[in-house]
Length: 286
Length: 126
Image 1 (spheres, chains in turn orange, red):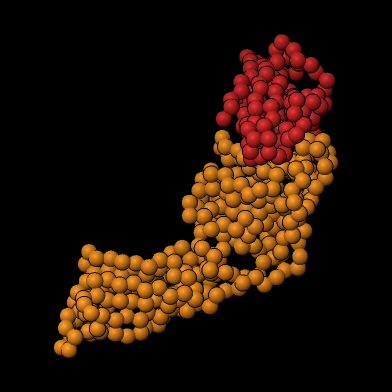
Image 2 (cartoon, one colour):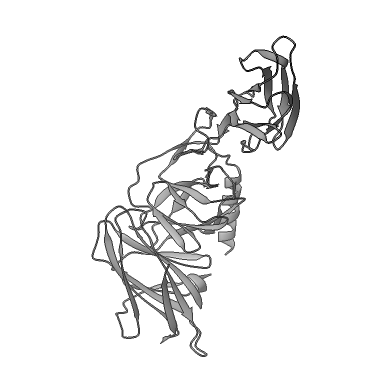
């Protein structure tokens, strides 16, 4: 029992030194012995608004030196790269409203621009900015500019036209009131047009290690269980829809072959955005 | 620790008190049959183990089964005799799967025991 406890402590220590690769966590290298019946057993806890656990088994995977990897904002938000998990940039959301009229622009990623327009006539418009859905692993405040113009029916500027800049930290919101009125020369305002530029620098992330895969041989298998649902894999990505709670992972060999392996895992919500994923807990190391 | 994870390969053959279950896994590699074998006390006979054996006529893909209870799990391949899993009373979670694509069939034999006596044994296919 003491030996197992020591292995557990060492494994947890080793895991704690791993950073996320993409946004998937990595088990680190594990070893399965040739003992008949040998099975490694792990527990992963998902919290927040988890919909499913994304899991990939990597047989005989080795690692290269740590590398600087640019985070790619061009990747569609919410997609899952089978190897690295979802790639999420920092984002802003904007909502423009006037009385019961509303329009919005969501997921304005770092380095991108979006425009919105609301036809509300003369009067006060309210612009709200927030960071809901941004990558919370990136802690720096986002820099933005808002350029707005009050326009008449033929898109001539009436009153109120300016550029403001600001910054927004994760979890914060900002509001601007923009007043459009009648111009002596161009007449009544028909609409307010706003251009939001997310000027935040695209962050580079450092992955702990670049995983080099070898094709699955079928000599190593993993099962992921939650409640009364189970899935099996020999290397392909699987998604087990089990919500929040503890997921069990079993790794074994149908031919009792010794294997080095690792696995990547990530708790995701229905939009494939990372929720809260625990480090692995080793229940049995064989 | 040994007391809890002791496994013994046995040559036990089918007997009239054993329970049997047969299944066929569909073609996809991710297919799993997930079963729960519940070992319950019969009067004052409290089960101390579950006997388990898996057989399959198919070798490609290769079937295997995992039996888990608490923080213990073991892996079984077909046609290698049975095992006695000393994990006491309660629910044993059994997964049956395979190492690739293709339909594969299997049958399992299982029963709960207290010493040498069989106790109440029920199975659920989730």
